Image (cartoon, rainbow, N blue to C red; front, top):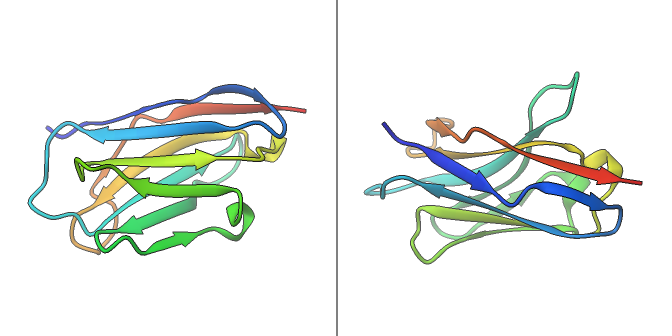
Length: 117
């Protein structure tokens, strides 16, 4: 059973920063992509950012220039540095692992991020 454990969420004022971390409970032979999604109350889950094994990144327009996704040296970890946070960034943030490029294979349990105005 693979687990993805997220941490780093919390309450922050608008304009502040948080750094989310996600670690898989095991190493994989290869990972195609690791990513972060978020889901706000009453809304569908949406992509925030993802990063490939070759370090290529893709960001949603609403976080470009504010968030940075990166991989850890252990290669089974992924981080999301969130700067200039806005109240509309409030959501539960989930990390995932896509092993083959065909879509997420594993999801974390989510970490709450709340941005106050």
